[in-house]
Image (tube, rainbow, N blue to C red; front, side):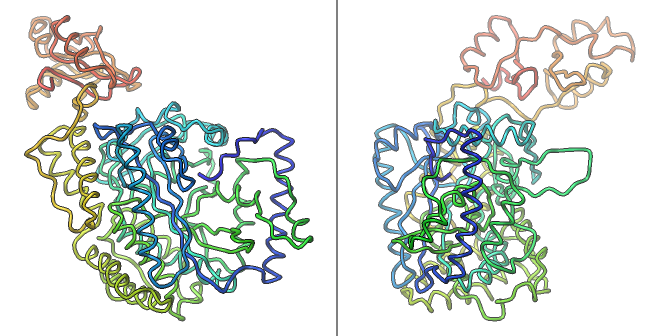
Length: 615
């Protein structure tokens, strides 16, 4: 999420000055490009690792600030939610054993974090979306207490003009409304950076867009969100919707999403991409800037383009163009933002080497993508693979081809040639690309999660399944094995779960009735499904009452033929609990009121039911 901008006032005076700095930064960038000042004689790679923090019960742990203080290392920084942190790895020149160096640094930093985390009762998990995350962790109290994050939430909410809406349909469907940007905190990624020579930037950027779909498909690792099986890479839909500032209206109008793939091939320079984004998206954050970039350039210094960098950090292209300054020299790079965190460090490094190899190994026939491929074809491939992952059938250069064949027959050879061209150690090439080849043939992290989720779901409640799955991911990550070698989760031993809340054991797949349903229909439904309690909702979807078998038996004589309605015979004063009600409290209520079930509500809306059987 970038710098903390703790000194910002976010007032109109600061905003006015920031706008001028932003405009000057674009002019300065154009001058830097015209004068050919961009460093282009060296290629470097870099990465950012986002992590999930969980407690002993494998649920989100909001101890990020304490953990960062304990680690005390500038490589580590905060993330939006207090149960996530990020590691910024050092840049390495693309040569020799650079991938082994990145892997060694990442492993060392992870071990450092794990050592400190253990003392706080915290565990670290690498995963695109943490299976055990729930709506309870999406409140404003879960936001990391940093001014930038609060301001970002405030501004995005104001731009949206309404609550954030989430609707993703996969095998299951998730529909939810929320009052903050914390949906975004469900996502954790392994962001990849590749330095690009100035003269090759547009060709490289278009190629990055063309290969994004196939690369995403073989790297997918985020199929679950809040107990629902959705897309193979649910992060793509979730991230776009969680930061969507577009207003809904009755008018049919074209609006550009703040998170997105783009809408066309790029033709000019990187400056034109930045201009396009500034034209399409409002300025969200500002900060005081001391030095004017044009003046610095006139005096022989190279500016950081602080305003442009801050603005660019609030526009979320899946392939993001970046300007940076290192050792006094300006450079350009492409940031790959669509790769998920996990499943293992080795898997991540394989993804890294595969993408970099593809990028630098681009065959000459792909130098002019607009002339050989329709942009919508590339965009469609990206959406397809986000939904279907490794099983996708894609359109590539006018031909229909399975993702498996495209990766094995075309992409892996390109990646291998690219890495060889830069003198990467042959052992690293074989080892890392070998992981990609095996994953294509055997299965991705997303498939491993889905297979185990379905298997466990047939034997235990959803909450227990998600805990068990998270525990298995944590255990497998300690072995350093790639995901295609991970075994199925054993079901004989129970997960190390701490059952204390009603939400952990309630039934969520409910049969419901409405007040104006006929009583004879209600009786039949209860008989057919062998259930003794049915909640009743009103037309607004709010809990209105409860129908129980014992209550129906008592009123049987009062049910006149086919005319009786559910509203006539239901219990209207219903004892309810919330997902965060303690299980022992629910048991006490059942005993006290001599009842066999309790509807579970959030506000007036029913989200589950707990019975004596569940207890």
